[in-house]
Length: 99
Ligand code: HEC
Image 1 (cartoon, protein in one colour):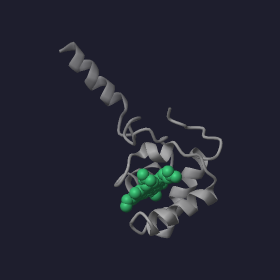
Image 2 (cartoon, helix red, strand yellow):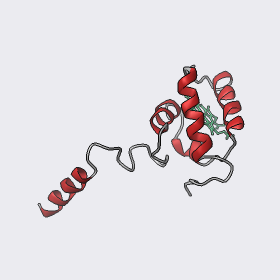
Image 3 (tube, protein in one colour):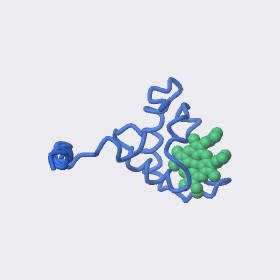
Image 4 (cartoon, helix red, strand yellow):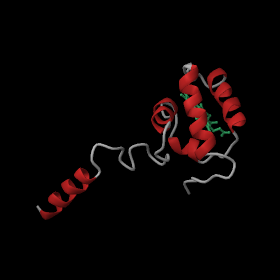
């Protein structure tokens, strides 16, 4: 019972905000939601998080993902949000490498 109470209070402590593990290993920051929901239909978000690329390379990868891997078309403004997110948090310096 005590354990349940602690669990509940931990959940409440997070409030309505994003839980740390809601988007798997992806860093919670603006754009994480768009990235997570568009990119985890076919593979784990870890495949995304383990990369470190420039924005240009990410953009190229999106073309490859769409043309060769059958990814759905992402509206341009949403794609921009995703690319900004990826370039900032999964850039060449790999600040959020998950392993
Ligand atoms: C329609 C399915 C699909 C969707 C949606 C999708 N991918 Fe992929 N992705 C794939 C496939 C298939 C591979 C290739 C896996 C392999 O090579 O084993 C892949 C591979 C990758 C890789 C690894 C590339 C490499 O060089 O190994 C990355 C990074 C990646 N995807 C990122 C993304 C991102 C970011 C998104 C969202 C914008 C996304 N994917 C959405 C199907 C998809």
